[in-house]
Image (cartoon, rainbow, N blue to C red; front, top):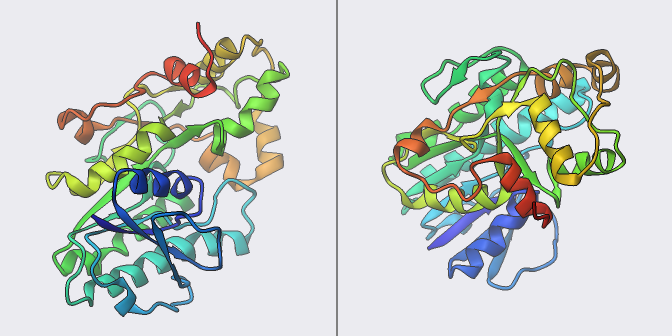
Length: 302
């Protein structure tokens, strides 16, 4: 297939593009600036937020995977929140409108979303049929998914992988946790009772390709492993794998002092997400359980 990828130089996109190329797909990366070339991938300069996009350059793609979005993993100022929203909602809308206007649009648009759409829900088991929650991230995620409506109206199959905490030692949450845990300073965040819904990067990347091909999957798809667990259990297992104690932790008030609103919506929120659609489809997760996933990613045996 010929696949268009936005957010191609981000944490997930940087792993996805080489994966697609290695499997014989032709990739077009939408990039805002000059970036190091990747053999087997073409680059198209554009800025989806500002609207500087030449629709003609998008012709003749079989699929599009939209991963563009400002990181949420830092303190939220009003300016930061505006960038988070614009990078997702405005960018997705412009991409969807451009794809819908093509003479031969792609068959499928896999447009990322996030489990933040469910908000802070305690112990509630959340499937794709669950109602959205409240809060800034939930509101952004709802608008993010709705921004793909022009593509849906054009007859493009639209899939929204609602992505959980992505684990890889090369970036994201796990990379930030490794140093304090290795130093014996790891532990739970706040009460530790909040649920963490995660997925290994090694599972997410092939899943994104799978979503372009499986015509039975449409709309929201929870992109998380089946083995959600509490923050306290997550910390205990990471400490176990690393052979380090986990008696220390970060009190909720300290997280709020350091990160403000982001702490309540990301670090301390409880989101127990079930990949119901993927389980019903029999999707073969490589890493369904956290301890085995961590040992594989970190190259550590029992």
